[in-house]
Length: 155
Image (spheres, rainbow, N blue to C red):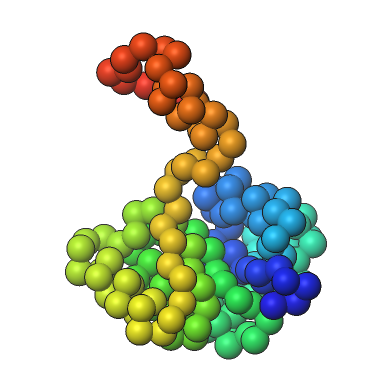
């Protein structure tokens, strides 16, 4: 890793990629956004320019062949998750996979097995779980400041 930062590429520039992963990586002092991959070349190039990434690609296999990428954030439609995650694991890329992990338990098991067999980290993105605001809300609930909650809706 260059400068002790994990070098990441975002795959898929839809809502999850554009609104969540790209700005988070760009702002994180321990990560470096090196690349963007999206089936739509214009969208990939727009993200590359906005977040100052080194490259924009439309070919996922080409991304996995790159030696300057430590991990991928897969933000594509769920029907693509299994194949992309398994391929990333085989390419020795760490994986942050958007939810849902797969379309069924079998796909999820395949993804986990591929990550274990290839010695890569696999994490499934859980909406806002590690976001500062959500952690603060959890602390308030755990302290009992609001009494016993039966439901909570946060936007």
